[in-house]
Length: 186
Image (tube, rainbow, N blue to C red; front, side):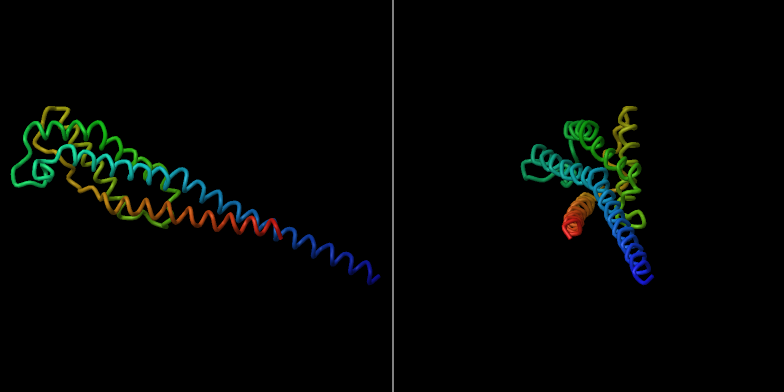
């Protein structure tokens, strides 16, 4: 009789251990899948867009700087009509599509944010894009009295947010993979 009870107890303990291990592995797999989704569907694209936008903006600045090296928008003399026309071209063809893509990521993939609430920097990005969309719409009507968004672009802050989010998730992903490999090996 004792042998039967011990056998049943060991079988039950084995079942519980297998169930708990499977549950733990499933939770780990879900965390890894979420991390992969955050990287591939939000932080990775946001990081790529902010880096590309920063680099192309720097190239625009170098190409269109005045003889003293400063931007026409950061100068005592206001921009010329030619400088403003060049700015409108770059905004409509390069900068606005880039920042709209950033905003669309924020709106469509907010479920992948690491934070429990929408970070203010992302809300400022969305407001900046809306401000530029109305400015560009005025340009389409031939109204050139405004050349910038009513909300400033948080370039350094958004780039830092994307860079830190991407790097942090990659690090967490590697740690999670290392745990998974060590759990499988044991």
